[in-house]
Amino acid sequence: MSTKQVIMVGFTLFAMFFGAGNLIFPPALGFGSGEYFWTAIIAFVLTGVGLPLIGVIVGSISKDGYRESLKNIHPAFAIIFLVAIYLTIGPFFAIPRTATTAYEMSIVPFLSENTGVWLLIFSLVYFIVVLLLSLRPGTLVNSIGQVLTPLLLIGIVLLIVVAGIAYFSNPINPAAESFHQSSPFTTGFTEGYLTMDAIAAIAFSVLVLNSIRQLGVTNRRDLLVGTAKSALLAAFLLGAIYISLGWLANRVDLGGATVDDQNMGTFLLTFMSNDVFGVFGPILLGLIVLFACITTGTGLIVSVSEYFNSILPKVPYKVWVVLFVLISFGLANQGLNQVIATSVPILSIIYPVAMTTVLLLILTYFVPSPRLSLQIPVYLVSALSIISVVHRNGWADFSFLESLPLFGYSFEWIPFMIVGYIAGYLIGMKKPRVEYS
Image 1: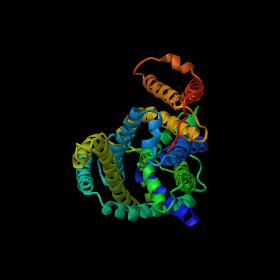
Image 2: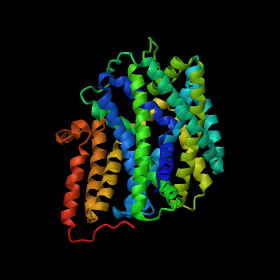
Image 3: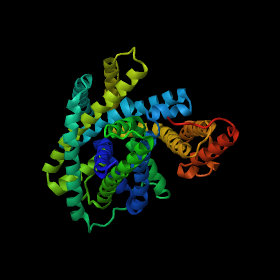
Image 4: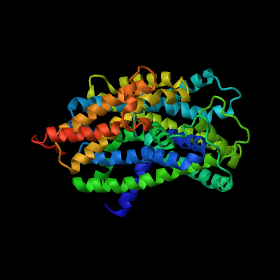
């Protein structure tokens, strides 16, 4: 790939992951982390930026992406895992979050009182628009997205530059009482789960492959190298924006303003835009975020509906669209904070499994390994992640987990992944090696 092609694909990747919904997490982390900011934000970037881009790269090792490579673990696992991912980035969490983020940034700042009735009315109109756009997927949403993504980027960059100058000499805000000061790295690392970009990368990596193939790149090695170069460019841009937004919130002076029941991230973005641009700032930012969320929500509905239609073709695409819109509408009316809170346990299960899967796929690509070296660690980490989440949330007592290495850092799955791979390799040493087509 030429430098021009790498830049073009890199910006395409950046646009895929740069969404209005993800912008709310770095400011919240920056404000709450206080003097632990750099440790927390670097950890956040690892999961919020690094993992998604590694995920895209690993998706290029098979010609059909993860749908094909995951079958090396087991065909049933490939379907179950992808269904879980599509439901997570679809109607269960990500799509409702687009609606609630749009509501909190474009409606709440201008309400005298934030009530559930306003959210119900807004989300009803929001999802009617999403439904109509999703029933006729075409170039409209893509065209709107191509306009709104640059507008959102320009708005955020202007906010970063102007607010950066204004806040440069401000003192660092003290760490919030709710921030886990004993483990800032772990806090930032797990906060990065909330972007959901690492699991979205698994679902959407085939889109990146197709865009590179359209440039005339067909050799598997060239696909991998071209994807890696483009991913590094996208990672740099995303990381710079996330760190900058977190840094601003780390130094913003709220002047006694209170958050009330609004999400901290949306409150901070609205406050800072009003602080540096006046009342015009929140209006412009709110409108851009509103339409950006509509296009993102529509794109997710279309992607998830098409996937389920592909595995269950007897159920028409439009039926899937209506079903997922209704589910998303219902869950969105919990409010943004509740949508995020509900997603945390599920993401705490899916992320270790996703990280294990991605790391093992790329390892076995370069180090020919038997199928068992994939299967044993993935199954071990899956089981461990489930019982760890159950224990941490107090749903059942599995206190023996607390004696596991790295449990205090939420990384207890890493030794199981390593030991599982070694055991699988030794047990299956005489069996055929995994091959990627």
